Length: 182
Image 1 (spheres, one colour):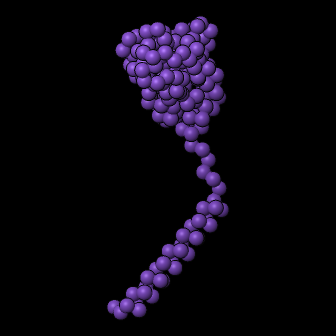
Image 2 (tube, helix red, strand yellow):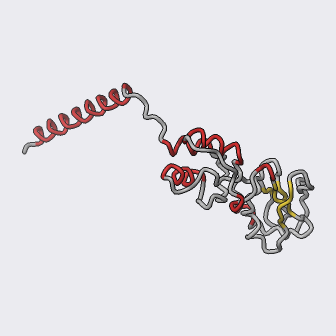
Image 3 (spheres, one colour):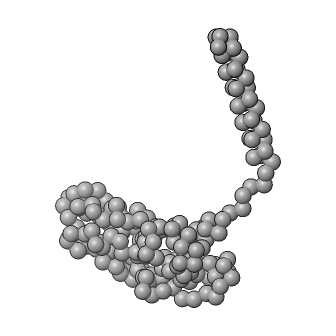
């Protein structure tokens, strides 16, 4: 094969690839958009706290389990009864109360509270919070932004001094943001 023949073959292949790519792009533009899958529609109704209270590692895996029939619609305490009703309507099922074995729904809302006098500033609670409701830095006291806290309690186990507890919403929640050195 000569060099000229090789160049012609490469040019022809490149041109064919460009034409095929353009044809596929045009066809994709004319095709109707794929409707949302059931998992996507379920996931859109969940609160996206990624707290794990449903015993799944996040909202999307929980949505997939609901779509497969492996999980019930009442397994999201942060979403509460409103989420259960929305899921029931979407799936044509009867609404039911949130499963109390999984946690407290917002109707009985609790938030984390940090005793800033006992906080040693270890910062182990920061990565545990799925919604970044805990504010602080290493060696400084931490505090909880109650407006963001879902009450999932995932910050409790990593605390080595047990200075975090759940309290009813409205109780002193520790949002002072004190910055004392630990």
